[in-house]
Amino acid sequence: MALMGEVNELETNLLNKEDFPHIDSLLGRYKGKVSFALPSERDAKRPFAELFLAVVGFAVQEGGSDIHIEFYPRWGYKINVTTKHGDIPINTSSLDLHDFQYFKTLLTTKHNIPTGSEDRSSWNGALPISFPIEWVREMGIPIKPFFAKFPEYHIRLRTAYMRMPDGGFSFTMRLVDENRTKNIEEMNLPYSIEYELNNLHRIKSGMVLFCASTGQGKSSTQYSCIVIDAMSGKRKIVTIEDPPEFILFGRGSIVHIEVTPDLTAERALEQVLRMAAKVVMIGEIRTPLMLQIALSAAATGHLVYATLHCDNSVEAFDRLYKLLPPEMKEAELSMLSAQLRAIICQRLLPLRKPTKEIGQTHILQRKWLALNSGVDVTNYTIASEEIIDRQAIIEMVLVDYDLRMAIEEFDAENIFKIACQQPQFETLLQQGLRYTELGNLSIDDCERLIGGQPISARHKTKRLQLSEKYNLSTNQVDDAVSELYKLRAQNLEADLDAICLELSSKKESLYA
Image 1: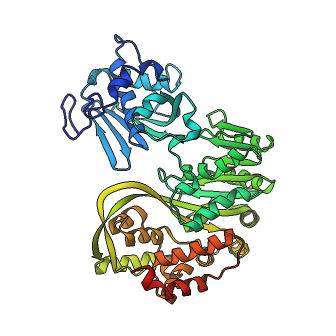
Image 2 (image 1 turned 45 degrees about the horizontal axis):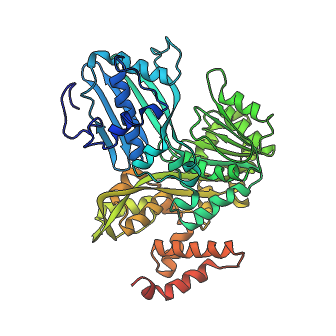
Image 3 (image 1 turned 180 degrees about the vertical axis):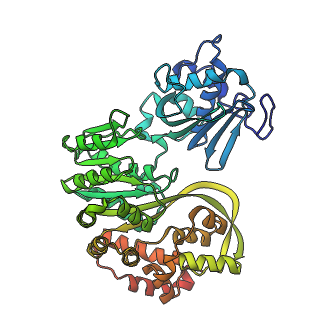
């Protein structure tokens, strides 16, 4: 980290038009049209406000996901923008070390934190910022037709503030940009997953869980599913979040509720049951009471979309089990099994540009992959260091009758074994290895960013069974599963084994 006043060549200087060509027009021609009003030239907060506005504009240009701002009394400021290429450090040499309180006051005021509350040790908030649409077009950002008709380009910063022990502070800001969200069809998912996600809005009631750790894109996928109902306008939607991320647009009734110290998530959810909503979106299930109320909502005719912090479907079922009250375990398990419709676990990965080289796994890698995925990987296309995009991979479990019975008995191994027989199901690591085979992901990415599930070696998915039976690669089996779902979409009968057999007979000509 560069000391205060030092210029580090590795840092991006956003106040220099060589590093950020659009800064002059933002602070000159368009500054009067930005909703984030700049203080006067003589105001001590002006340098902080200019740099912060430049950081947000740069994050929009780069498709950034997070902005990290820290202040250390001994060293000064550190600002980083997280993009698909990794974290980009921002030069802060224009800021005065001794005026750090101005920066904190500026940001807390913009977040509508009451005067005198800046010294609280932590808080959460949201900051809306609108840029003129002409400036955004000037930067070359593609704008969806729905948003192109508005004069402003609107984003939100979901902010978490924390005071540090040495008197410093940290702001972590998640950039929420509706224009950047993808429809389900734009997410480049396996066709089977795309088909099942599109079918979620047909469910009349029940609970659908979106699971992942922080920053893995689960809220974006949840939004992509719920927006189908929002655009149709046929069902009233109520969202409960802390704070709200995406602001839904649509024809029908849409209500956003923000959780506050005076309005807990549990109280808000109880109130929603009286609001005649048909679709309820919950930011995150954190407590046993929230789970109970969510299940009650699902049982009384609501379609409930909720998120849960966990890594994979096995952990999701385990987490749900532990959230059930011990004294009512049997009754609540019955309710859970009856109301749960699907579990969607997600990971967001760097999509790399493939090379033309073939690599071979070494013995330790093969052992780790076999133990944690059940997949035998020997040769694969080597991925380059160049990141071209971010890609979501999804592990999706549909709750059918057999799975419902296993949930009621809470046999975790049997739950996984039954899920393995669903054609759309493959573990996150198995899906990641398909990208590795194509050179879009490295083995190191799989180990570091996905991790493994030893249970996968004991119970092979239907896809792996078909791969071994017909001597097909896992990507070829995915082609076969996609064909199965395309036939289903046309209401045609199809047999997955027959499709794999036909594909196997044509393998040499198709994959020469």
